[in-house]
Length: 402
Figure 1 (tube, one colour):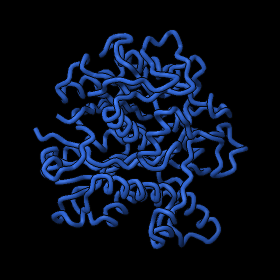
Figure 2: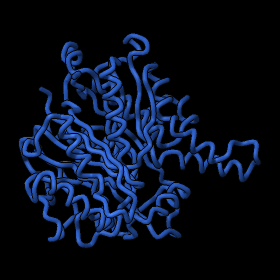
Figure 3: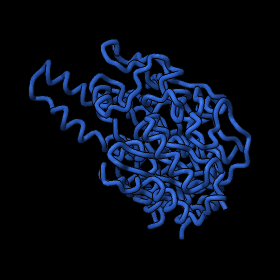
Figure 4: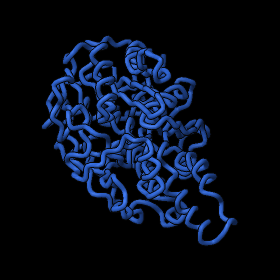
């Protein structure tokens, strides 16, 4: 079976723009969750978020700025960084040999709100916000494809917080079918009134106004998550061809598993444990070979309990380090899993597990939670978890390149 390598990372997050800046902040435990400033949130119960301050003029051609919204600009920038990091120019590769597969979930609300405002002020000749939102899912992928001349297999995956992992898995499938190179992952988020209300409807957002106490997964004080924006895009290619061209290789996407939770009230087991074991089996990795688990970290007590039960059922209670660096950024919807995969690859490179900040692990959660500060460790294999509202469960196994 074709081994798939990651040769480029473009990370853009509330605590760092660019992979180096993001990783430095993450290892140091520096967060990017702040009082929401993108719009007036004083009338809403939730008031903090992981925002990415961003000047598009510093990163993108002026012609692209009027055509895009904030999230698409972040994605275009992350894609360019990833390709530069990989040292490739897709336009120089054979036509149709490169593609883009990304995740989106919250994205589109900001664009849709803009269309709603136009509809309200100028009349029905403007496209409806609903149509804009449905169409927007494809915008990030399309803009990246057009900008870099990537005309091969492309697509968008929509499965909330699990989406970034699902997109990476789909990219791996296409590479195994013969595509030469794919940009994959997710950059997501929607910090606008319409998007904010839509996310609040899920009843999983924290209403704490203290940025350091609003998002506390696995803590007895957990009462929901903080939304954020950003994510990561990865350059993925066949391991053998990456080595042939002398690329720096961060690691392999070695395994993947995905499940759906059963209908609520069915008394059947949730699907996360099976997603983990499926990913391990796919990678040919045993539980005792895993050096760290990057948790989904919902910060909803019942969901935290279920995640701990799944981790312990596979690895044994307290037998594997668990971390949730997203406590520094907020939950990034379709960008969350991809950013955690980037963090896992950087952990392998640098021999360090980033911390879960601000959290005091509740005694009922019997896990080895890496909190307080980063932990030096030999990391060769990592598991990244993602769960999306609606019952999505995904797991990806990342390991050092063989």
